[in-house]
Image (cartoon, rainbow, N blue to C red; front, side, top):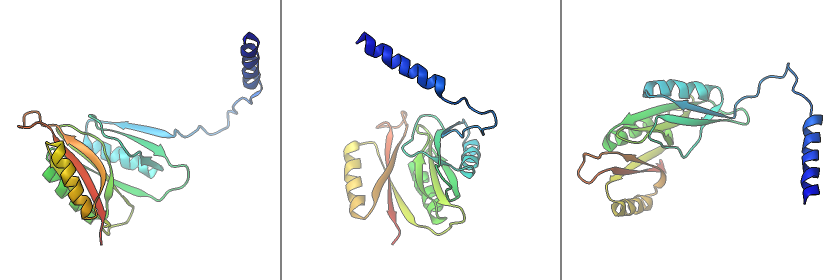
Length: 186
């Protein structure tokens, strides 16, 4: 056992010692991930679009108490896209804003911030203005109700794409849980 550990250490040492040193003229590596964090929605909108223009794409499955985003550098050339951020404290207002953005060709991409104000990101290929999808936001304070509503919307051709919480501790019943449903336009 002792001999095996010593041999493994020697192999590692030789591997590091014989690997070529980096050449000073090599271009610096591009970071595979980029983290954006800000307190203002307008700043996030600007920074998110600047990152997209450099080939970064939003990593799906986010949603935190902070207005932050993680982006990943695309491995190859990608189509240019545009992001739009929607931020509101009411699920009904978010439904209207998502419908308006969808009518301009945007699709749901991710939830960024959750809490008293929720931030949702939608995206589209640059130059695209034709709508492709429609959205239903299901909002309730009861999980059992949410399960029924998701089932009803699924029967209409919608599929679940995201969730968020409007934190409303002052509201009777507490937080408002929201499921984001999407379906292609017919």
